[in-house]
Length: 266
Image (cartoon, rainbow, N blue to C red; front, side, top):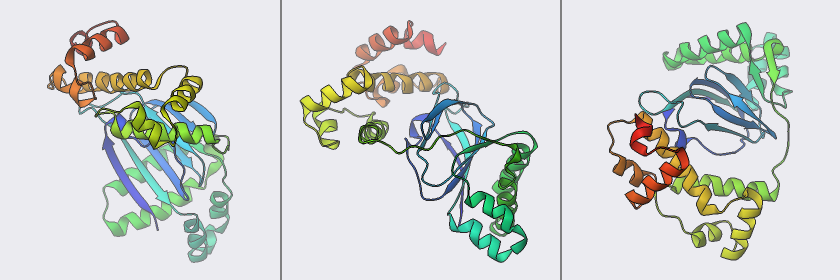
């Protein structure tokens, strides 16, 4: 009926832009960056609690430098299907009005003030509880989410165009495969284009070549690893983010950051 996930992952493992058939409540414990909800993109900080309704495209892009000592971001997510509020209302008729508010929600909201504090406490209590206690906590969580007085709308509904869908597909592919060599022919074939058409499309939409964008993403991942994992040699980090040549990595990183990887780490 619902899923509860407490996740610690490196920023590059965060899923790309997507939508789902159910609701998603997210509590950002560690991390910051840019979130996109519908067609609205804006910064987010750790400590935020956000509820995303069904079918709303969304994405959290985490700053690779805003990580814990282990090089990870951390968040708790509570997912539930559209039928969950309805079933709760059937089981507990006194909750009918509150569950109707959730069922009518069409835009993402960010909880503030006391509502945010109560939701965080409920999520933390559920995190450390057994399955039976967690189920009771889920009912309390649903009831608290329905108090939308302290919630601020932070999205705008929009459907992805064919161009946006293609760019999303490319972004997800890069995030899953950046650690190994990726050729233009490979990525072009993946999105159903020939090499020439792909190169023209990408430069027009992104203002840069695919290889430039790919290497910039690799360098962002490397910057996070350099700060988060001081015990890993620079050569191993270069290989881990997809640079087959250490000198090429050092030159690229130095040009990008203005300092060498070693100095950046210090």
